Length: 302
Image (cartoon, rainbow, N blue to C red; front, side):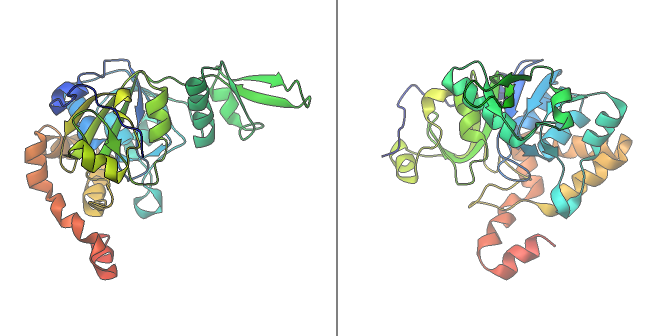
């Protein structure tokens, strides 16, 4: 049986959940690319005017780009920020990198994973091979080199990564903060175990017995707050519930690329409003049809 935790009731409103992220915090973002991103929390951070965040993640898209576009980010530590081959590069991220308004510390997924494992194990460093001979070392003065005492090989070593808070979105969770995730987990499990606290949104709060049947992936003792926010990952996907919203992502990209009035209009319509208003506007229920047939999911992505 999966491990689970029966603590107190950790359900809070979305605004209270996001308020646990302070200005200047080291924030790990769960999910990856356009899947299971904690978008409701991201929008709420923008509403609350958060500043000076240090973001870390594997490979991300609209979550990072939106936070950068609204001036919330000081440091971005990611392996990739963009919209894959489907929609292209991330405009706010690119502008910030080019103009130097955000410190870009390009990393790689395997190195971040090694740092998280060091934090979980309570050790001062972990050796890695993948970045040796690349320019990534120069972007991270906290990395070092050492000679292996067993083989004599020179290796790069990376320190533990301990985020102040991890933001996750899950399809289901219970009142005690136990979360079920469908694979792939990306770095969500490792972020949860390495962070000082986890703040989560879920599409549905369910009884603990139902959650245990599905399987607990992130146990509740790691989670400090959970908010029920239906479609809280939109416009990214949260399978099996709903696919990603390609037309909405394209609309954001157009607005972020143009900047100025176009971006202001996007923010006024989709970010300044509360989540209930947002959901009524974007109608994410239509994205649940992805599983009906091959033709259904193909139609969603046209």
